[in-house]
Length: 119
Length: 87
Image (cartoon, rainbow over all chains, first blue to last red; front, side, top):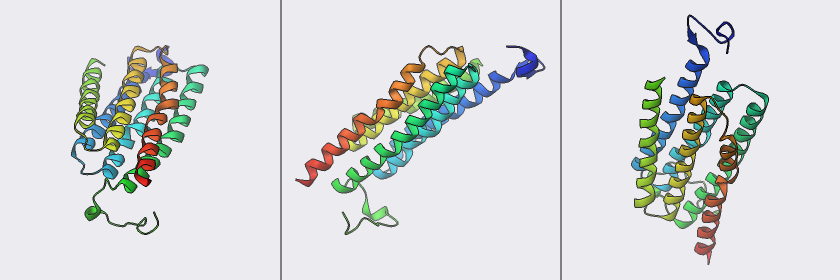
């Protein structure tokens, strides 16, 4: 790690990027925990739960790729982001459908219910 | 950097504790499976943060495995609940 390429004035730029991305991911995890505790029903908790699954994982994997820039790391990082963003919406969709069918949601706080009569 | 480690550890620990409380208290099985998904995502973030801060890539396959198979639990529970509810 040569200082001429990665930073200036004795500050390594990779350390700055690493710290910022770690803090973004940690903030997403904290927001998901608070949302799981505070939100009233399954559908709104599902909304809170998807934040660290996508944005947190993308931030942390990009962070690893910035911290160790090599071909293997970047390939694995792209694969991890690809599979996570492929599978997380599918599982969220199925959990949401199951929550609607089993009635684990509050109908009085729904703004629109486009499933009514179709399920 | 030590400040970043402490703050990130506190935030991730608070998020994991919130998910654990929801796993214990959650009124339905769907709440519990959502909270366990959040716990897996928090574990991914913690492992990756440790890798990025210490600058090694030893546990990168663990992240790939968690990202690949994290779907299995929630999809199977959702299918099981829907099938049982339809009969």
